[in-house]
Structures are given as structure tokens and as C-alpha cells.
Image 1 (spheres, rainbow, N blue to C red):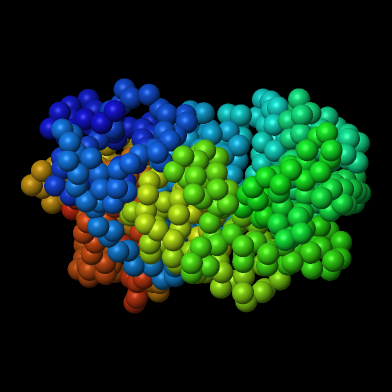
Image 2 (image 1 turned 90 degrees about the horizontal axis):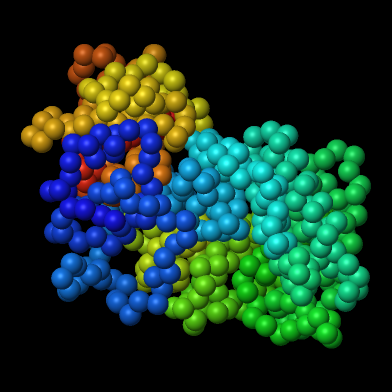
Length: 543
């Protein structure tokens, strides 16, 4: 529930600055002249996203109280040294995260995909600011070993923990990935239809998705466990069954499932994620064996799907695209799984056509399907709506554009001086501790000079860039992102300082700016905080 700023109480302001973060589905379409809104601290957290896709309202308009429509806020440009999509989108994705459950509002298996997209972002960018969500998600949900009645759900989680192991090298994540793979093979496989793993524990059908995921998971485990033979044998066994099962049709596209009574391809929709997962699975098998036949088959399948599942301009569409609209929330995740696995394949293939395909989709989605940092379902545009599923798919897509890792953070753990803080646990040091779990929070008085944070780099340093994480990156409402600020540089704490960056009208959860020259001190001056006049900075990264 939202309340108008005029009703904001002192108690709610104190809550807004506390370390306990409020999670709110973001206001992506807010009128410029409507009253700003803040999160009601007593509003319950949504655990499942509202399906807003059936609305007849023009996606370029938003409804006012009492009726009528107003246009979407214009997108505010942000300057990035490279394509900005992944940095901005992953930060705003955190507004859908609930640390109390360790899940995003994308649901159970959806949260496994969301977690994977966040981990991939950290691995590809060099950032580690969202490590806290990896550990929180694991610890909050580990009691059942991430196993439920759906074998594909189990596999999605297994793959997420495999990626967490890659990122952190913590054994607990690898052990959990092994537990999920063992549960699938030990209870899900039988010789009906010649083999294969069932989709669900009721053993009613054998589908493509869980078998593709298992191949990828088992081969991935082999690639990370020295001396393994079991997981590789099971991965190869499952692939041989899959290849002979008939699930791959004559167009080199993969249908949904087998008909149990006949063991024949059911001819159902060729969902994008089924076309994608197998690419990652075969890539893992190639890494395990160096057998080029796996890459050759993967390329054949990728060529078929990149030519078939597209709209004008070679932009990926979901096979059920005409129904979305009224599609399930699950379907909004499928394209993300597709491009994630195509990226993994092309990391090995280095195929120029696939690289162009991913680049074209990313640029088009950013240019045509975006409202601030939020990305809609149809990447060819226009922006329709937002939820954690749409945003997860966008992060997966934009991750393919990450080509340069962040270098050493010059501001990490350096001394800070702040003009004030909301609480002792929200001091300036929390903006340079390397984690988006903590923040610097400061009140901005009406008519005052704003809030100030000085960072002492310890010595004069050559500067390349500055990246700032705002409220959304810490899981708070996007309306609380810093609206206006300046970045200044100098060589003495007393000044003088030179303005390097000036931003007004910001709505992004992560902003990135190029810097030049040398300086010892970085000053962040916030003249206009969030919609409630509070400054919230989760991290400042200086290169």
C-alpha cells in the first residue's frame, strides 16, 4: 500500500532509514506531476507477483486516482563506459527480493533463475556487492535440500548452487548441487520410454526441460569434481536417451514432452527455454569430454532456434507470444534461460552470428522495451509492464554484454566523513564496505544544503570511473533512488573540490560515470534524495 508524502510521519521516516529494508514492487510508471509515494511500513510483502499482463490499459500510460491517465515518466539517460543494461537492471532487480524468505517475487523455481542471473552478473562483471543475497537465499531455504515434487525445480536450484560454487568456491554450494542431482537420478529415472527423468514425482510425464537441466547439472558437476566418473556417465546416458527420444523434431526444435502412452513427441509448443537449456548442457558435455560432436549439435540447434523464434529485426520471441497477454508468470522467465545458455555456448564457439544476435537483442530491449531500469516482456517493445520474471530475463540478456570486469575498487574500506546518518549502523563506512547489504543513510532537510559523503582514497590516484548503488540495489523501493547528486574530486579534505559529475532527475538503482584526472578525495553531494527526502547509498565503487 502506498501513501502520499503529505501523510508521512516521523515514525515512518525513522523506519525508512533503519537497516531493516522495506521491499516494494517498484512504481515504474509514475506521473511527473503526481504526488510522490513512499512505502507503507505495515504493508505485507508480496511473495508472488501480481499478474498485470491482462490489463487493457495502454502500457504507455498510468492510471491516476479518480480515473484518467498520464504518460510514463521519460527515461533519464545515464552515462556508462560500456553498455549499461546489466549494471542498471541487476540493481533494480533487488527491489523484488525479500531477505526474510531469501526469495524474489519470481516464485520458487523462478528465484533459482533470478539467483543464477545475479551470480552470473557478479562473475562476469567482477562485482561482489550482491554476495549477501546468495548466502541469505541458501541459509533461508536449505532445510529441504531444494528438492520438491518437480524435478525441473530441483535442477534449477542445483544449477544455481553450481554457479554459486564457481563464484565463491564454498563447498556447501557444491555439496547442495550434488544433492539435487542425486535426488533426480535416484528417484526420477526409470526405463519407461527407454529411460529419462520424469517431470514430477507423480511420474505422469517425461518432459524435455528436466532432462536437459539434468544433463547440464551432471556434466557441470563432473567438470568441478576431480576424478568424477559417476556424474559424467549419467550426463552422457541422459543425453543419449534425449537424442533418441524424438523430443527434437525435424526442424531441430525441441517440443515440450513425450506422450506417455506412446512415447512419441507430443508436438506441443517449442518453448524458448527448451531450445536454450540444451545449448548449455551440450557445452558442459563438451567441456567434460572435448568431443566436438556436442558443439556441432549445439550449433545446429542454436541456428534453428535463432532463426525460428524471432520477430522482425531478429528479436527473440516466446513461442506463446500471442498469448502473453494472458501468459503465466513462468513464461516470462523462459527467454532469459534461452539467452543465458546461448551465451554460455558462444563463450566457447565464438560465433559472430550468435554474438550479433545477442547484441541486437540487448540493444533493442534497452532502447525499446525499457521504463527507466525496468524491462518489459517483449524485447522489441514497447514497454508493457514489470515484474521479477521480466527483469530476470533482462539481466540474463544484458549479462551477455559484459565484456570488461571491474578493476580494484579504490574506495573499498577507505575512511569516510559524512554530514550525518540515520543510525549508527548506517554511517558513511557502510557505503564503502563492498556489500549492497548495508547503506549510508542521511536525512535531507527542506531548504538545506543536502547530504555529503567524503571518501579518502589515502593518496592521489588516477581515476577512471565511479559506480553508485542507490536504494533499489539494496532491495528498497525505486522511488527512493537518489534523484540529484554531484560527484566532486580534490586533493585535500578542506578543498577545493572540482565538480566531475552532475546528475538531476535520476531514477536508476545503479549509476556509472567516467572520471578523468587524479585525486585523493571523492565527495558525493546529494541535493535531492528519494521521494521521502532521504539519501540512501548502498555502495560507492571508484576505479
